[in-house]
Length: 93
Image 1 (tube, rainbow, N blue to C red):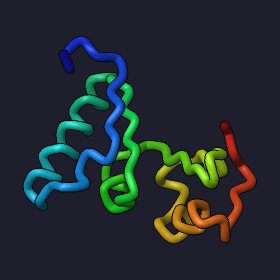
Image 2 (image 1 turned 90 degrees about the vertical axis):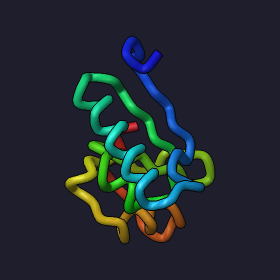
Image 3 (image 1 turned 45 degrees about the horizontal axis):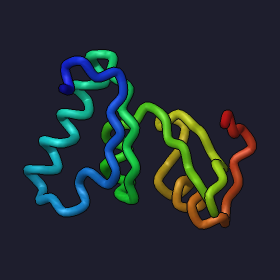
Image 4 (image 1 turned 30 degrees about the horizontal axis):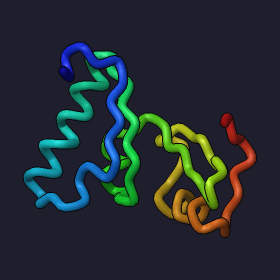
């Protein structure tokens, strides 16, 4: 199924996994992306997100408040967007 997929959506894929299993999932995500598959990860684990995401989109109270390349932000910034204590002026939503 994954070989023909154009889009894969993962909701908290590493939430109940150990370290080794988490790395396997993140490696799979990177391999899929490298093959041109669009991967959407919904996660509260920012460490995992920063390891594999090209872009981070943040929702606050159901509204997208930031859409930013991962390389242009930090975990602290993202937490600020999530909690509403920080705003991002470059929303591309």
